Amino acid sequence: MGKPAIHHKMMGPRYREIKQEQIPQVSTGKGILIRVISGEVEGIKGPVKDLVIDTEYLELQWHPIQNSNTESRKDTKLLLM
Image (cartoon, rainbow, N blue to C red; front, side, top):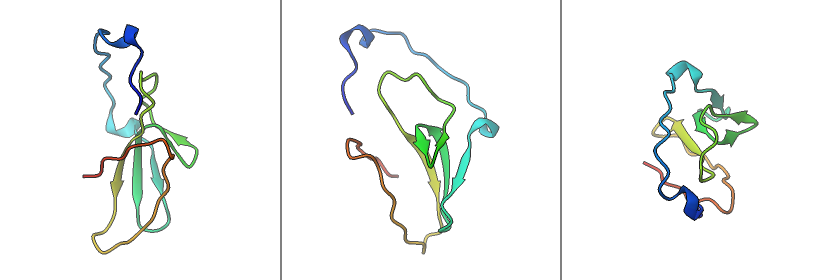
């Protein structure tokens, strides 16, 4: 991720209340469910927009024995937990 412009450095927080029912879900058809909080997956956009840094925040759910591959943008760093 790139660094925000200097004028955003001391910007105050912009908290957003997101309810569970506002978060769209995408099923990959391979047993994986993706909840899109910010960013876009298969044309589905998350409710969190206008972030200083272009961010994809996704929640993935799959079965422990399920294997799958997925693509991400080449300029993206991923954190999986």
